[in-house]
Length: 435
Ligand SMILES: NC(=O)c1ccc[n+]([C@@H]2O[C@H](COP(=O)([O-])OP(=O)(O)OC[C@H]3O[C@@H](n4cnc5c(N)ncnc54)[C@H](O)[C@@H]3O)[C@@H](O)[C@H]2O)c1
Image (cartoon, rainbow, N blue to C red; front, side):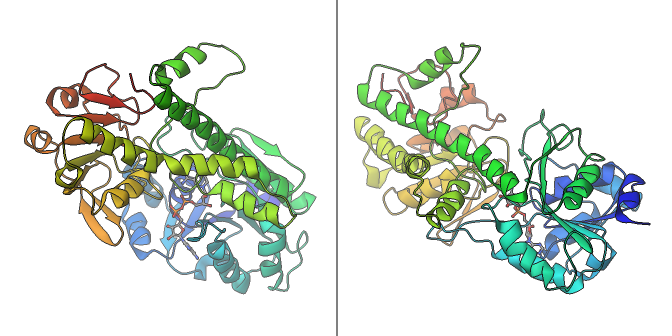
């Protein structure tokens, strides 16, 4: 049976490399659509959990993993030995940046080499990790070519960016369209017919580099618009007589041509903060400087610094000495209702507060332990006693689970960087508003 027939009959075996925020939900979606899935991750802990039917992500139910295990549609491994059995291989490994904010695509390279050593004829490889344009063609393809197999004839390669939005209950893997760009027409075609079995809609582009650039555009669009409202928030702080949240609410009533974005203590995660740097790094190869995009990144990265300065101002206005202050950070994840702390503004804020205030506590129901500068912090239990003890509560992440009325009633002072309290009170200070 050739690959096309195997896909159409759902008899193709699908490998997922990297069982993280992208890979695990993807494995579930592909398994639930009827394909047999082989998960591969270098993290033994994740592999063991998958094989025991235990989820480690809020968006994935243990029950869903167990169902697939029971049907024999899912099994995880921490070596690449099973690659030979896979007809389709999705790569969903991390693409972070280095300390100096250059792209780090070493995980793609590593994974490509492991696949290349074990490739056989008739396999389709799909890169799902976000990366700069031409990674698929100029980095991954040469590594896979080392297998001796010929692209478009012996093996197939595409880029299909992942769009999963952890915590989003409306837009799931199934109802979010997938963009696909293959190296050859057959690469694109096979990827298209495969994903049509898993998701509602597949959108074809002419090459992997268009798909790579499209993914960066999606995330940079958010980065730039968040920077715009962050800048507006800073202006409102300076003017002192306008509340930026009221401005955004008013502008949002326009039914066309406007989309609300909100200011905050900084952006984090594995995408919106990282991706502008991937593109600006690539642009420099062409003597092109993405000033606009970099300015947006700079504005967003300034926000945790601004928040700490404003916190110190608030303490001063309330006659609390910074050195003697005890601060409770509410929310450590980089966004609402998830446990992901990668590049979280809470980490930056804690590291800026370290050594300056007397004591830092944090609470996050999704994050029991947080590591900042090699020091471990443990989420404290929220109680009236704790709120009486701390001088100021700093809301960094507005998880829905928090009871903001209770907080308002019991805290001595609140600095709300997310407009979570939504009530005017003299003990509440709001980011983007100095009224
Ligand atoms: N998290 C998101 O919301 C999101 C959304 C869209 C796209 N993306 C992109 O998807 C990619 C993956 O992101 P993620 O959030 O799932 O990362 P993650 O860190 O949650 O998961 C990646 C997994 O890959 C594993 N891994 C690392 N090297 C490996 C190797 N050589 N072989 C096998 N496994 C390996 C890690 O152990 C980890 O479990 C990134 O490029 C990211 O930018 C992420």
